[in-house]
Image 1 (cartoon, rainbow, N blue to C red):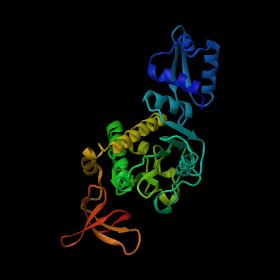
Image 2 (image 1 turned 135 degrees about the vertical axis):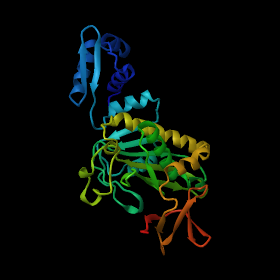
Image 3 (image 1 turned 60 degrees about the horizontal axis):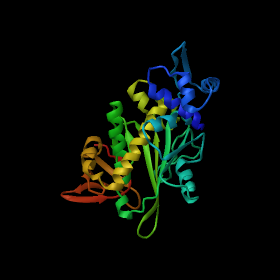
Image 4 (image 1 turned 60 degrees about the vertical axis):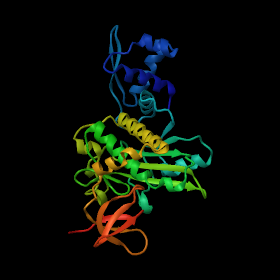
Length: 329
């Protein structure tokens, strides 16, 4: 990514619909007008469009549909999000890449994004389809040094924060299927989360939060095996999104959610967000992980985010992890 390209694009984002003077931009960046024109031509070659107006300057009229490093960085700068976030063309898994960077000593927090993953993974060793170039394959890495028991509600909280963000920003209400799936109102899955941590005896030393979010794509674009169960935000809204702007906004929302979690203020809105986005309470489910599956009616969650099941009479069973499937009536 060119920091100069990012600075040029940031000037256009700040201007909105107003034209940007080439003279003024050249002076602010310490360049000649010819150099600015040359940079704009390079940006045109990768999907940007600029409209030139005599004596007024340039307007940004079109941006790439896929993630673009310079544009994403410009949006993050506009939102004053400054932890390092690097966009890679492709990677095996953004979680794996984040883990490698933590092991190599990279300062945290930081983010790793990829246009595609060759070995994207979800919970329980499942594969995450990761070839749609307009989607968000993201991992955020932290060194929190918090007690391990504090980590229990983390994934659920991050999912609820993302649901709240998307509803507030785009007007689309998502449902959270405990513990890590986000679904459209029709039940199609649009996101999955995977949290992985390195623990010492008394603290979480390294933490990686992974998110796969389908921003774009219609069901026909997904592999046959998930075509009837997967969807995207853009498809649900029925309108085209600015992928780079929405990716930056999601990153900003998740980093704020982490800050709230780290500081402890998350608990003030945790219950309300669960009630707004939970799709399981009152449903008959089966939970499996190891050993015999547990069947029951979902009652709620406890303060740590564990699922509370009514499993017969007044008996209540607490489930801290597992795979949930809905049972037929």
